[in-house]
Image 1 (cartoon, rainbow, N blue to C red):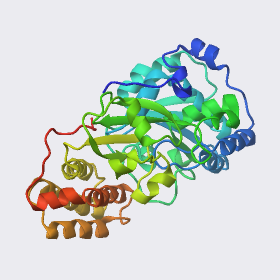
Image 2: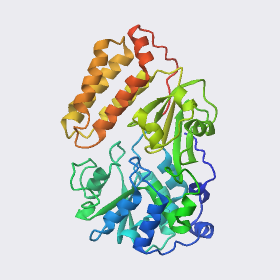
Image 3: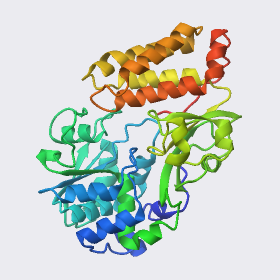
Image 4: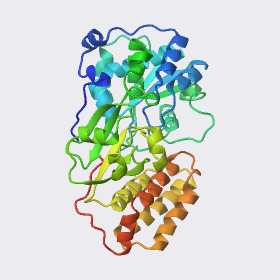
Length: 403
């Protein structure tokens, strides 16, 4: 997809050499461990990889351990997201600054950048060659799979095993790479960490809201004229973000928020002023997640789009437990039959039954995230389900939003 980005902090140092990067932003200050953690806590920075966990708490937990490791996560297995790819392609030095800040904060002497081979070879390695950093950074190729960026899967891969999630405990921040406490942070999170280290928490809070401070990268796709990556202030109205991606291609019916483990929001609610915040999205069982918005045109069918996504998610399961091996394929198959044929009340009951026996029972979050999308689909597209009962699906062109 084409990429468009607003001129706000994460975009300011795009395509710069390391010397130009330092001329623009200045040298990284050397802050004490406690000083940096306190600054991040005051800034209110949360993880940008999907979970939204407070970064200061992760830093403090890993800093308490022995011989910790830092991993910058750019795996981005979410098919509807491009933000991490954009950031590493355009501002690799800002990400590498964040790795160095994180390493200094937790006391790590080794760090990794975990991402797709082409990004590592084309963007990260050339940037590393320009720098003389205190902490050694090792590029590590991530498998191209939906679950490869889950933090325990990432640690498993670096430890020489398959990139599959593992059951917890222990959590990776207590026992991760080579058995050491490991800080795993999304590359956008680390880029923000480098900016906070330079300019402070008050500067970070100049943008966004009290509950959603700073800015964030958002990938907009589907029924918009200019799909791509935008940088927006925290708490921005979802409709305003979509407007920045160009005109709608026809009228919209709903927006998938948060990616393939996210939830659908009816367009009427988006138009009423819904914001990209955890509080606004909670009633829809959705969250900002990794910053993904997929616009579904009225000419599309929410059931069919979701069925395709569920087929993908079922095929991406780890194959380690019953919910993934049996539950997800059965759920995807039922949704596909409901979407492609004439719906029945029995199919609707089967979807809910499969959701109940699958959610929260997996070795990782994948089954629960997939169930969230299935339930959101059935809730948001009730009218479409009714039309399918009558054999009246009106989908015309196939909608976009994936790779």
